[in-house]
Amino acid sequence: MNTPRLVTTAAELRSATEELLQKAAAADPARRPSLALVPTMGALHEGHAALMAAARAENDVVTASVFVNPLQFDDPADLERYPRTLDADLELLGRAGVDLVFAPAEEEVYPGGAPLVRLSAGTMGTRWEGASRPGHFDGVLTVVGKLFHYAAPPVPARFRAYFGQKDAQQVALIRRMVADLNFPVEITAVPIVRAADGLAESSRNRFLDAGQRQAALILSTALRQLRERAAAGQPLDLAAAVELIRSQPGVDLDYFEVVDPRTLEPLETSAPLEGEALALLAARVGPVRLIDNEVLR
Ligand SMILES: Nc1ncnc2c1ncn2[C@@H]1O[C@H](COP(=O)(O)OP(=O)(O)OP(=O)(O)O)[C@@H](O)[C@H]1O
Ligand SMILES: CC(C)(CO)[C@@H](O)C(=O)[O-]
Ligand code: BAL
Image (cartoon, rainbow, N blue to C red; front, side, top):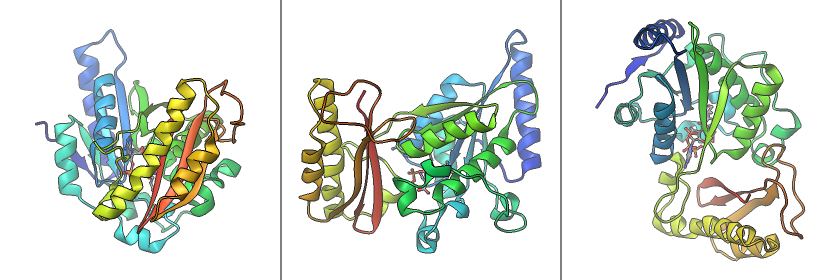
């Protein structure tokens, strides 16, 4: 197992990145080396491991960040209880072959406290997840923009960043941010990793008891049924899928829509789908808000 190097300041990250990229460039001078950033909030699981594996397979140098970003939490209780498991995270990152782990303290990222100037996710950030978590995506984009600056290659190199498709709205917004603000980074979205029972892996799943977890499986079941109908070219019958979830005791559905994966605008579902389509949902189960989605085509 490789032991990743843990760095906590911007200066350390920059010099360690430079050293590793120069080594990669010297090993193969004919090719520009590549650097991957995988941003996380820690409490790592198999979903994160898939992001690390994709980044490892495609790049010379892999940096993971572990930072629980207070700016994206609108609920102080949610921030307070967010799991923090750095020792176990470092083990997983070592097994995944990550080179550098950037785990800054809050004062490193927000030296004067919460920043006055922030990125705005615009109207795309106020619907779906944004409707229940006001300011969430402004906080996400602000920290991701900062992480891109911290981690950017200090010597000529390709720069790629990896995000999970589980957070589909986040991926769509980060792609828009990169396009709208010309961040020199290529974005890769990694497919959702599910547990054997079908539940999408999430750090917050640990707060579900056995009964709640069983009830939550209705979410992936409903999504799978929609995907099967889409694959068969049948009309989706979104209303039946919504009803299936609403009939499950203990599951409080927030939204369930079929949207354009880039704009997140709802699509017409009464006729067979023609372009790209994504089924997107969120529900509260016991103490946890769960999100999930399925690429329909
Ligand atoms: N099951 C999963 N499959 C693929 N990617 C995932 C999965 N879970 C998380 N990710 C991705 O890992 C990155 C870091 O996510 P984060 O640290 O917030 O973990 P999380 O498990 O999504 O946490 P939570 O669900 O509690 O918000 C994000 O890009 C996220 O989309
Ligand atoms: C991208 C991210 C690490 C920014 O804090 C977070 O939103 C997450 O873990 O998905
Ligand atoms: N994966 C999204 C991070 C959050 O829930 O704040």
